[in-house]
Image (cartoon, rainbow, N blue to C red; front, side, top):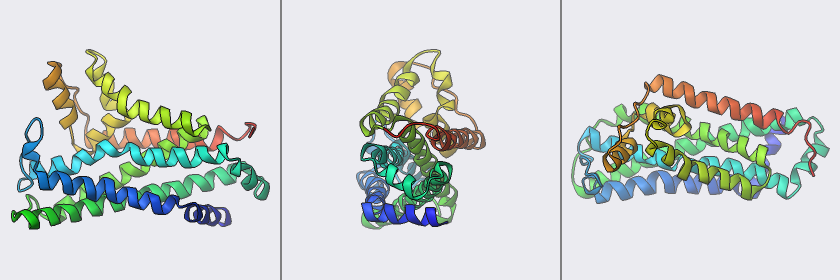
Amino acid sequence: MNVVYGEVLRLRATGVALWSALVALACGGGLTLLLALTGPQNAQPPMPDIDTPEGVGFVLGIGTVLLFVPALIGTTAIASEYRHRTIGTTLLVVPRRDRVLTAKLAVYTMLGIVYGMITSLSALLALIVATWTRGIPLGVDVADLTPALIQLSLAAAAYMLLGVGVGALARSPFVAIGVVLGYFLFVEYVLMMVPGVNVIYPFLPGGATASLTSFDFLTGAIASQTALTPATMVSPMLGAAILLAYAVIAAILAVFAPLRRDLR
């Protein structure tokens, strides 16, 4: 617990916790408010407005596109410790690498959950503000949005762990950031557009998240533009299991990969 407490203090002292909260507000409340005010009916292709359940689902679901952001936070924070050699000081104080890495994993899991909660709650508040500003009713009861908001929070925590795993393996912030951005902003979208290969998309992190949140807008939009058959999403439960499996694998790599590796 002392090691965990030390990691929490480090997050506060370096500003990672504060900046994560601000970014969560921007990605959750900021994006949702922008989409809700401009109207999903102005999207391409047009979607129902937020006075319908479909429109509310679109506005909340589009936030999953920015789930690579918590992955970037975890990646940068971990990899920067190797770049600036602060990980060496930590291990001098606590020589047990497994204990240090497990504590870091626990703290970043908590940070991911908090990030997801801020994102979800700010998105909900943005929807309420948008409906009040535009003078239209919200398409669903607020209570009915609880499962979707919880799913978004848990997905953010899983992506944070994915980022921690990448950062622990790469150690270089530039390489780690390049891997995360390249994969989530390029590789997954390319795979969605390759005939025959796009069937694996539901089993990738982005596809699993789309299945978990029942948000298949991106696959449908790409299919309509390319005349491809959209990938068939799996059930939300299976999507959650796939995403959890990725998070567990990333956690294992983050703990065990650096155990016997030189810190130079």
